[in-house]
Length: 102
Image (cartoon, rainbow, N blue to C red; front, top):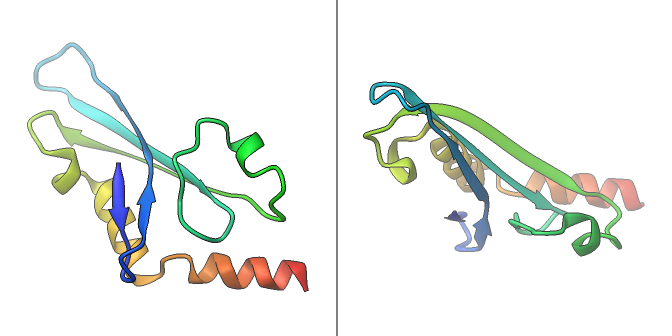
């Protein structure tokens, strides 16, 4: 799933959905991505892709939502990721990465 921060930088997260066979049960949506201090990436092989990085961060969120909702708009984890990227973004990660390499 693609998100955009306040600087119009794209970030990509994996999304996995778990559903019960019950028509009225909520579904569990899980989102996760990795970052070395820049954009968040939905990597197929983070160990290899970030092998040379000094630091590696993983953000993973899970939340339930009714099956009838659109996960891109009404899902609590997507709302959190969107708000996080637009308010904090990777500023915290960049400062932590700089601090760790000094």
